[in-house]
Structures are given as C-alpha cells and as structure tokens.
Image 1 (spheres, rainbow, N blue to C red):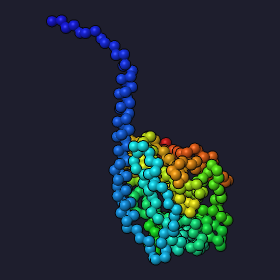
Image 2: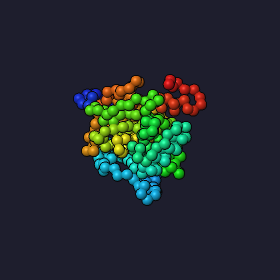
Image 3: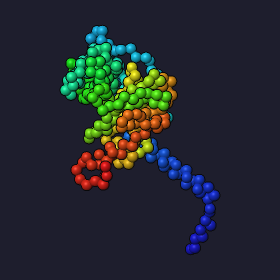
Image 4: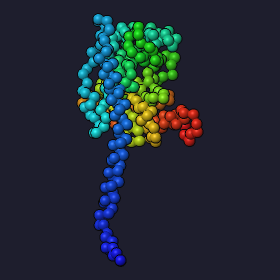
Length: 314
C-alpha cells in the first residue's frame, strides 16, 4: 500500500512562534531562580521577628533616642521581587553607646574615652543573617580629636561581644575627611563594615555619612541577574549602616554576583548613589541612581574554599 503524505505546509508565523517559545522558557527559568531567595528570606524574617520582640530598652532614662519617622521600607518595592528586609530596630541611649565605644577602644588598645555627649550616632539593627543584632556607634573624642567607630553583637556595655572597632579619622590617621555635596548625599567612610564570607553566608556592610536629604540606604545581592531582597537601613543622626546577605547555597552554580546600593529620600525617591573613596582624599563621581559592585571575588572564594582542583582565577 502506498501512503501519500500531504504537501509540506509553510508556517507564515514561524519566527513569531519560536520567539514566543523562547520567551516563555526564559520566564520559567527566571521564576525558578527567584525561588532561591524565598526560603532563606522566610527564615531570616522569622528570626528577626523573634529578636525584635525580645529587645528591651535597658535602664530607665536610657531609652531610645527620638528618630524622625521614615516611610515604610516597602514604599518603593521591586515589582514581583522578594519583600524588603528592614534592618532598623531602634537607637541606643548615649550612656550605653559611650560605654560600648569605650570597650571597643580598650580592645584595640586606643587611649580614648568617649563621653555620652560625644556620641554622634548609635543604632541597633537586625543582623543581615537574621541571627542576633548589630549595634553600631560613631563618636568624636574631643580630647584627642579622633572619630571612632564600633560594631558589636547585641547591645549594652555589659553584654555585647565586640566585633570590631577602629579610628575613623582625625590626627595621626590615614583617613581623609570628606563631605556630602549636591551629587554625594551619602559618602563612604572608614567606619564599621566590610565583607565577610563563611561556609553559610556571604555578607557586606558599610557605614555612610549622609546629609538631611537621605532617609535610608538599601543594598541587595543580585545573583545571575536575579535580585534578592533589599536590606534597608535608616539614617540616624546623619549616619547609615546598611548590610546585605546571600547564602552560599544560593550561589551554587552561579556565574555572576553583583552588590547594588541605592540612596532614598523621605518620599522614596532615588538620590545619587555613593561613589568611592579616593586615595589622598575625595570621592569619585556618583555612578548614577544605583551603585553596582562586581563581587565575582566572592564566587571565586567559594570555588576555591573546598579542597580539590579549581579553574577559578582570583
């Protein structure tokens, strides 16, 4: 028996159909990648809720300093992205802040004594990892003329485990004094912060000095073009300490890692993003409304952290 096949039919919309199929496939891949942020974020939020409820204000008369109200951190959320993580818990009273700063200075062997009136900013934040809290203090010592910074776990001079402390500027230091201006509402400092990596988390934090235009600074990691949650830090007396986190599990198989920073005013409008500190003084021009920092070095570190051969080139 002879089977006669019908003549081959040409699809006039062939290219359109192919483009639609490819677009649907890319959308499915983006949706699957975005799920990497859901579980870690939920765990962090749960831990942060417990932490926030358990905090007390300490001794009477040494409660939180008043801070101007700031609109909800989610005032300008990314469409269809994970919800923002608000790091702010409260400000710390000047007496406890000064005591904590003095512990920091004693630990690094600096002959500096901070009085409560010399505290510029003291704030208690949720740790970006969702475990515990971080207290950041910035103060000026009138006797020596130096500015000091202190970052500690928990809060209060009697219970905090000091993480880091140092001199941010003044006589005998290499730090240069920079000032905010029309295109630099937030400037980087030599205050508490830096990059941290372990087998579970990759984190970044910084201390910015800001002017009156700034209400908050937010940072997030973007893995293979898929953004994670914004971690939002409020301005307190002219200082902001933002921090962001991504888990090493979320970085498995990743090829690109970027850290983004944005500065917002009280109405949620984007201001000029921070530039870089320049050797010898000054700040580089603002990169625009979003600062994007290539953190491929963190992926490289993860590739070489385990024993065995690696093609990663630092």
